[in-house]
Image (tube, rainbow over all chains, first blue to last red; front, side, top):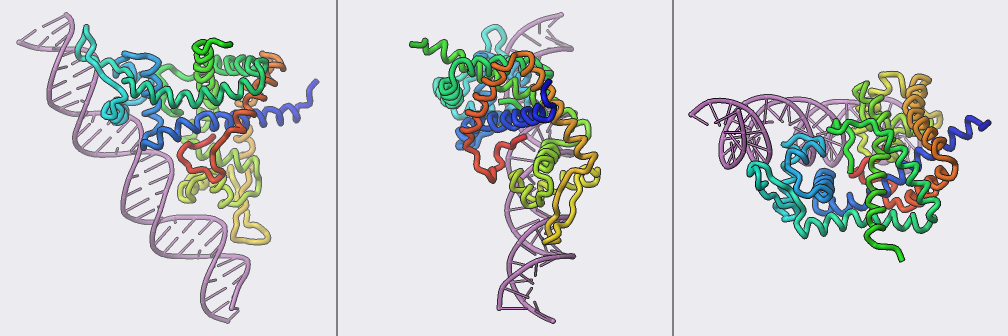
Length: 158
Length: 158
DNA sequence: TATATAAGTCAATATGGTTGATATAAATAG
DNA sequence: CTATTTATATCAACCATATTGACTTATATA
């Protein structure tokens, strides 16, 4: 039988830990983007286009869960900076297929590699047992995600 | 020697995991607060006041990293809802000491207990080894937090 | 040919943050 | 006792970012 109060304390500590760890994890991408005067949406566009090259504007809107008007500003920024290219689809020339330019891929990689390096460091510093445990717990948590697929845009990702 | 690409894949998966796990973790508090038409600031006020009862308004502003004008709306909401009480300090009657009312403590507990329950569940389901590993990794990550103490308000916490 | 769809844009509006100026009450310096 | 500083609280102007609605253009399809 575990002492209820000490159990609660442990969980409270875990809650704080989660928050500060997440903040550390997201700090560097934010800094890299903010340097260009860009925000979360730019980051998320780069992220989603990087992971699903050739997706359409409407698909991206669905992925991000924002209105098209909210997307177009950042999307245009990224196109004008030659980080995202939009090419008409062959079968249907109305739809624009979005993908990362080489420069866009470089930036996207720069951003996410800062996160990969951080993770790689802490995984290596704490041994594979800890890393595996972390993965198990996070997987279980992610499985509890109640969020709808076309996300309600209340709490933005990336 | 580890294959670089598979290593990157593992880290990419960890990045996604982190994001979805965090979203699952924060989903329920958001829902509970949104039901009252409230947002993150209300939550964070309840959280910080709950963990540091008797703190002053200026201290709270520093903890949150927002302007006093941005704080006062939500703070007034919470006072009018009798969730937060402000009592003049004995030594210096200018400063208001903020604390949770019984109702405020109840709500705060309701909010955070949804998170405690989620954590307790996944910790229990995955064994103490995994839980300990998670804690080690998250602690190491949190230690890398570069954020300044009076945070620049660019990337909001809680 | 008429209609529907994908993308892009303009306008009006809401929210939530900012800074600046000011008011009030209480503490403190001279 | 008076003057100044400090802690809190507002008011106003402004800005960024999101929303919805209406519309245009190009393309596809019935």
